[in-house]
Amino acid sequence: MRKRDVDTVTDDAPTVLVVDDDPQLCWMVREELEGEGYHVITAESGARALKSVRKHAPDVVFLDFRMPGMDGLETLKKVKEIDESTDVIMISGFGKTKTVVRAMQLGASDFVNKPFEIDELKIVLSKVLERKALTRELAQLRTEIGIRSIDESIIGDSPGIRQVKRTIEQVADSGLTVLIRGESGTGKELAARALHSMSRRATKPFIKVNCAALPGELLEAELFGYERGAFTSAYHTKPGRFEYAHRGSIFLDEIAEVPIALQSKLLQVLEHREFMRLGGKKTIRVDVRIVASTNRNLQQEMARRRFREDLYYRINEVMIEIPPLRERREDVPLLVGHFLRVYGDQYGKEIQFPSKETMDTLVAHTWPGNVRELESLMKKMIVFGTEEIIAESLMPEPFRHSGGSAEEEPHRPTRQQELSLSLKEVSRRAAVEAEIPLIREALRRTNWNRTRAARLLGISYRSLLDKIKEYGITTAE
Ligand SMILES: Nc1ncnc2c1ncn2[C@@H]1O[C@H](COP(=O)(O)OP(=O)(O)OP(=O)(O)O)[C@@H](O)[C@H]1O
Ligand SMILES: [Mg+2]
Image (cartoon, rainbow, N blue to C red; front, side, top):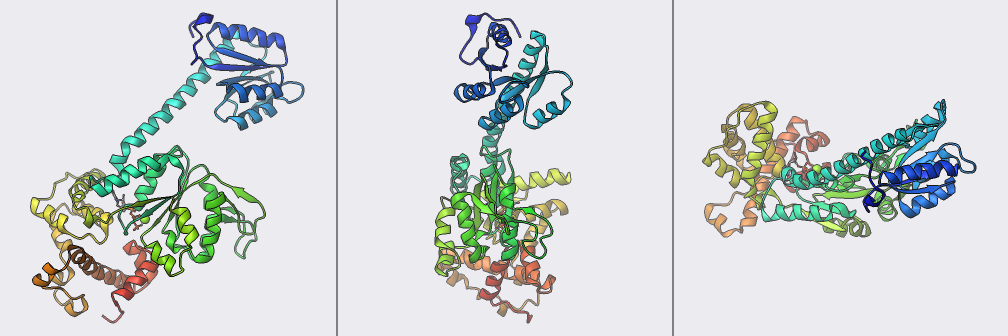
C-alpha cells in the first residue's frame, strides 16, 4: 500500500480498531496505520473493545490474545456476535496452536505473531481488506445477476407473466410470506425459487417440502424434526426442515394438503418463527422466509373446513397467481424456443423450429398440463428429432386409436353448439377431454395404484381422487 498523508483520510477509509492492554503498542500501531490513511481507534481491554465495536462498527479489529479480564477469545466471540462481518486479526504469541485453532473456529480472519514488524501488520491488514472488498463485490454481482436472470428463468411476455415477474421483484427481499396459486405445471415452484434467488437469502438454503407426499405424522416429523425416542422408530434425533432452512427460505409445496390438525402448529411457526421438535422440550427459533403453493381454491377448502382461515390469512401476505398456459397463448412460441434450446444443448442436437402449421397447433392446444406438458413435448421432439411427434401427441384421444369408446368421453358439442358456448367453457371442456385419457393411461400403467399414478401425472394424490370422481373414471374398461 502506498504511503498516504494523514490529511488524505477520507470518509470511506477503512476503520481499524486496535485492542491491546499495552498502551504503548496501541499508540505505535495507531501512528503507523494513520500514516497509511486509515481511521484508527484503540481500546485497552476487551470490554472497551466491545463498546467501540458497537459505536464505530470498525471494518477490522486487531485483537491481542492475552489480556487481563476478558481475554482475546472471549472478546472475539462477542465481537462476532455483535457483527459477524467484522474481520478480526488475532495478535498472538508463538506456539499457541490450540488457541489459534479455537480462534479460527470462532471466525478470526488472520493472525500476526508477537513480536511483529509493523510492515507485517500492514500486509495482513491489506490482505484482509482486499478479501472483504471482494466478498462485497461478489454479493453485489450476485444481486445483479439475480435481477437480470428473472427474465432468463421465467420465460413469457404475456401480461399475466409480466405481472408475476414484477411482483416477484417487488417482494423478493421483503421477507413477506407469499402464496403462489396456479394449476399444475404452471411454474409455481419456479416462481418460489426465483423469489429465493432474488432475495438476500440467495446464498442460504432453499428447502422444499412437498406437503402432499407424506401422511400427517410423517409430515410433522419432517417439518419440525424429532428427538430420539419421540416415537417408536425415532432411533436418533433429527432436525426438522424448518431448521435446515434457517436464514434461507422454506417452500411448502401443496400446502392445502396439510392435515387440519397440523395446520395449527404450522400457524404457530408462521406467527412466531418458533417451534419444538417432536418429543423435544427446547424451543427452537428460526429465521426463515416462507413461500407456499397450492393448485386448489383455498376459499373453497376453508368453506369445507379443510383449511384454517387464520392460516390462510397468514400465508397470504402476498398472493401470486400464475395463469394457466391456455390463458396466455402468446407465451407458447417463446416457451417452445426456450425448451428447444435447452434440450437441444443438453442432448447435443441441432434444433429445428417447428413449421408454422405445427406452431399454430401448439398455440391452439389447451395445455391441461400447462408448461410442464409443453416442456416434455419439446423434449420428446428433440429426442426423436421430428416434429411429427407433436401432431400425434396433441391429437384428441378418440382420433388417435380406433376402438376407444366415444360414450365414455364427455359429451362433445357440435360446431353449432360450440359457437354458442363461451370460450372459457370450450377450453375447460377441451382440458377435461385431454385429461381423461391421460388419467386412464396412468391408472392402467400403475395397475390402479393411485399414489403412483398421481406421481406419474405430476398431481397430488388428493386431486387425482377428485378427478377420478368428477370424471367418473372406473376400473371397468
Ligand atoms: N414461465 C416458465 N418459463 C420457463 N420454464 C417454466 C415456466 N413455467 C414453468 N416452467 C417449467 O415447467 C416445469 C413445471 O414447472 P413447476 O414445477 O414450477 O410447476 P408447478 O406449478 O410447481 O407444478 P405442480 O403444481 O404440478 O407442482 C418446470 O420444469 C419449470 O421449470
Ligand atoms: Mg410444483
